[in-house]
Image (tube, rainbow, N blue to C red; front, side):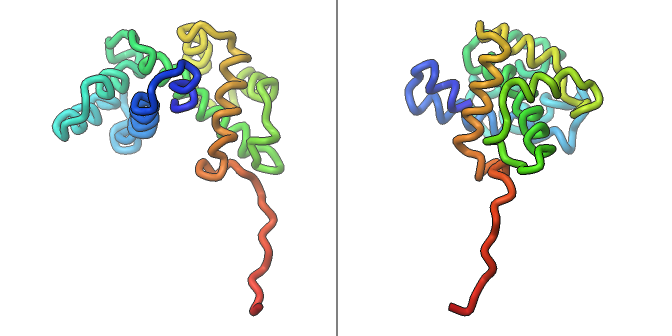
Length: 169
């Protein structure tokens, strides 16, 4: 989310809002996973706690069934990145190295074609998200991989780093 904000040359404050929105948008999913509840319950919790309307609207709009049409760039970016980041993560974790540095758009596209792989990831959302941003699917996938590479350690996608044993020295 932050990487797209920077790509669109948005101010740092907006990039931070994009990042926060991306982090918070599914916070209620494990407890309220049904379309009747997610993201509506989480949105109400956030509204009651005073979150800004632009964040609340973006979170609602990432679920097609909410009836909230995506209009702002943040809403479109959240939708475009939501399912894709999950697929990229899954595709990374099945690599022997478990490192996102070994992943490219072609690998992700092949995983998209395998309906049994990460079956809960909605492939249509990924395709439609890229189209809503006005970029090709390969460009979108590559951009997201590169953005995630920049924070691979934080995401747990840096791979099987050889650990040195602790010594008494």
